[in-house]
Length: 98
Image (cartoon, rainbow, N blue to C red; front, side):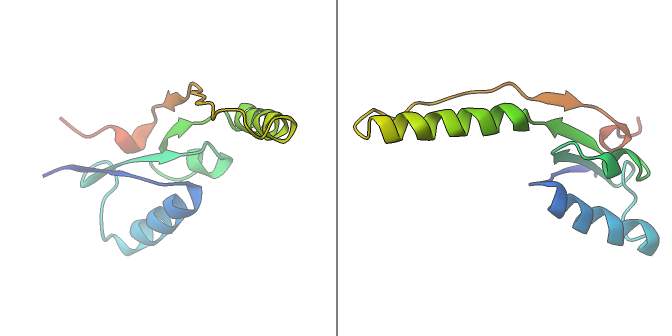
């Protein structure tokens, strides 16, 4: 039975991937498919490369500062929900054999 393990962030991903490979505990891509958040350079260096959901971190930071400044200017301003687009970057870790 195949499972997909969705990572919370790059720190959890590295803590999951690094011990598995050398120990041969679980074969990524055969026994389990992995999808992580954040697109950092090491994720393309492991075998198989990790599939990730790339978040617009620069835009998240700019938006956070903008919303904080608006709240400082007008503390009674109602909360604002902001939805930013992410990008699924498919690599080898999420492709299970047929």
